[in-house]
Length: 374
Ligand SMILES: [Fe+2]
Ligand SMILES: [Fe+2]
Image 1 (spheres, rainbow, N blue to C red):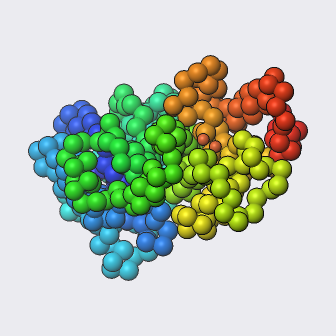
Image 2 (cartoon, rainbow, N blue to C red):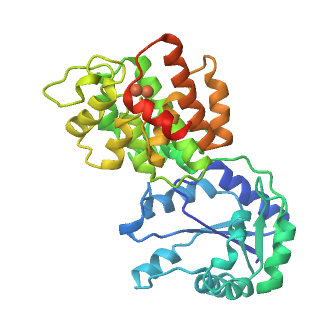
């Protein structure tokens, strides 16, 4: 029985995953779908859902995608048996033994790095590999030719017109208590019923008491914008850090009491005060100890010289969040969508020009940023 093998984190599985598998199954006339959720050692997972939850959700998400759907826990079982790695070169032959005629499904971006895989020639010879063309990978046939010449094997191009769904944006929506569009109803229900996305609920409850509805809405939009920029530009910033910094960036905006906290004298009672106070209060009221997160909150209004990627990300996301519809924000947002660095600079330029025009005093950190980047 022709079987499609699809390996992924499925953290969580979304509609684009099931749409893709259905497409490939139809195209290749396969009858069985084997879903293999990846297993990461707990110490370096950084994932959202546990392995067990990803298995349960995959069952719901892929139901009906083929005549027979199997969720195979081979990666977890091997890790439990003491194997340190789940290389495709080792796992595929085992799956072939188990299911017979298998086709391994991978994305076009994986093909790009195929030569860096562990024993690529063994992966190529294990079974046919279906390669899904995604946006930006039009020259898939050419890449297949290169890889085949080097490593042999049979690669099947799949011209699937996917829409770009980002797991991390779905994750952010869920953690914000919103229903994301790209997730099946059953998957969403399972997540809610089992409290799988409640991690930041206490923070959100607290924030709601600190923020007006308008500011809380802005906060959520900054989270979504930051997570989007991070994944769209492959900035590789840790999801948790991005989420924490974005969700807390304005935690002190509407509660300016100093409460004995020490912040720069020259910021007191100015519009930039809340960034310094925000970092202090994130630590005091939310227990944040991660310096990267606190530092991103610390300069989200002024910017500064030599910024980290996380600082630039929160700064840019704050000014181009989806709740800001007035001129020229949509244009700045577009710039940031095209190029992260240019987007950041455009925001800094815009902010600087605005301050100059209004004749407002410009905070020293902003002047340093301007000198450094513009
Ligand atoms: Fe702010
Ligand atoms: Fe903000």
